[in-house]
Image 1 (spheres, rainbow, N blue to C red):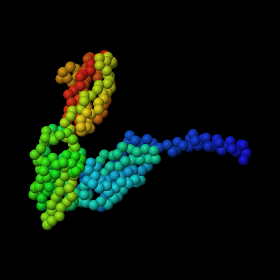
Image 2: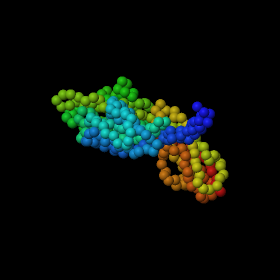
Image 3: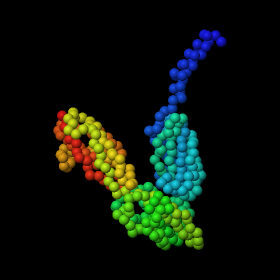
Image 4: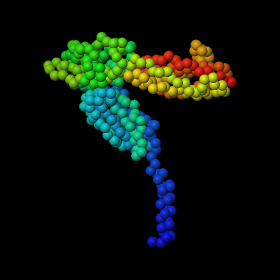
Length: 330
């Protein structure tokens, strides 16, 4: 083989290495979230197989579909965990309660999971052979304000129900109260409140006894009691006693590590005022708690401002506001 021919091959190889490999670089979709279209949340589906549909995510070449029953917080069966292509899929399911989520994928990356959707297959939610738990929601967080109310759906041909509450994430934990049997009623006040319960994880469940004999399995759910306030936020910028120009100001802060036994998801919101008592507040849209730790606020009037942050967790515990920072605009 001639040297000239070898040199040509080397040039082609280098060109492919520098340019051709671009065709194999996958888009980073790790911060993207696919959107699940069907089934809709809390739908009751009578058609089988069930139609599953989602929006195409740019950069994705395949999708992981996960369906569990009755819910991801209390998986009793996992009827589907599959990798598929396209944006439509059909799958047969028995009458029961389910939750579904999808994750987009390519050769190099996986997206964030989609929002979880709950649905039922069958004309009655969950069908006649299982108890559909209604309240509290699965994986709900509450605090000392928890009122002890539990409810579930009617099971066809059910004569009575048994309710149990355990201090753990399974029925293997100790009973908080003795099991309660009642005829025909699909709700109960267990006679306990958040003040009676220690901070921790609880599992409750209900089973039905059918007319003529037979019984369902326990349907179970987990909930959490969180009574500990989050530590105060740490204000970052603008720093205290800053002097800057009017315009769009970017405020940032951070949330220290949670110190509670149960660590509920936390949100926060900023307050900006013309006075240290925070009675003359700057209007902020939207004025809500959210999971962002930064906020851009347009301040066009020169003067002295004061800002602080309040933290709230999903259980409903709200911190006292942070000590304020002072900001002077010119």
